Amino acid sequence: MRALDDIIDLFAHLPGLGPRSARKIALHLLKKRHLLLPEFIEKLKVMSSSVHQCKICGNYDEYDICEICSSEKRDKSVICVVNDIADLWAIEHTGGYKGVYHVLGGLLSAIDGVTPVSLRLDDLKRRVSADNVKEIIMALPVTIEGQTTLHYIAEMLKPCSVKITMLALGIPVGGELDYLDDGTILNAMKARNAV
Image (cartoon, rainbow, N blue to C red; front, side, top):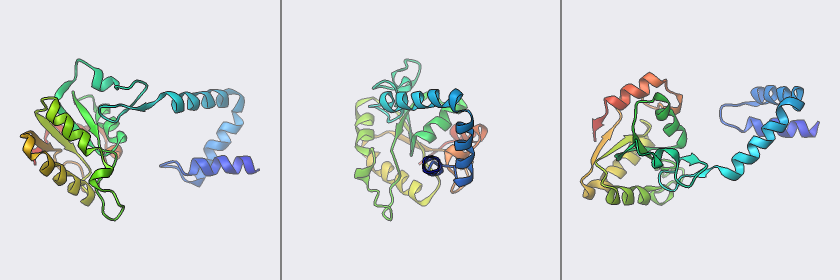
C-alpha cells in the first residue's frame, strides 16, 4: 500500500498532526473517496494557483492587496507587527482590532540563521515612513527571539518618531498567539504598553 503510506507520511508532516492523526485522515478520505476526494483535490488546486501573499502586509489572499489592506474601514495609521500569518488570523478572529498588519515572516535568531535581511523589515520601515503611521503594535511572542526582534525593530524605527507599543503581558511567556483563546488576545491587545 505504497500510495496510502505516501499520503499518510505527507499528512504526518503537517503542523499539529502526527502519524496517528495522519492515518485517521487518510483512512477517512479513503472511505469517503467518492464524496470528499474530488472536491478536496479541486480546492487544493485552486488554493495553489490563486492564493498568494499581499504585497503590502504579507497576509494570504486571492488579490495582490488583501481584503484587510484594501478596506476603507481599517485604520491604516496603526500597524500590528506579527511573526506569522497564523498570528494575524488569531488577532483578526477576536474582531477587536481595526488597524492593519505587517507579517515579518519569522523572528531574529542567530542559531537558526534568521537575520534582519531574512525578514520583511525594510518593507515595514518604508510603510512607516510613507504612510503617516502613528503607532506600531508589536504582537510578537514573549520568547528570546520575539523580544530580540521587538528591540531590533524599536531601534530601527527610532528615527521615524512613531509610537511603539507591545501587547500586555497577559500572554504567557513562551506563548504563541495561534494557541491562545480570543479573550486573552483581545485583553492583551487592549492593555498594550509602550516599548
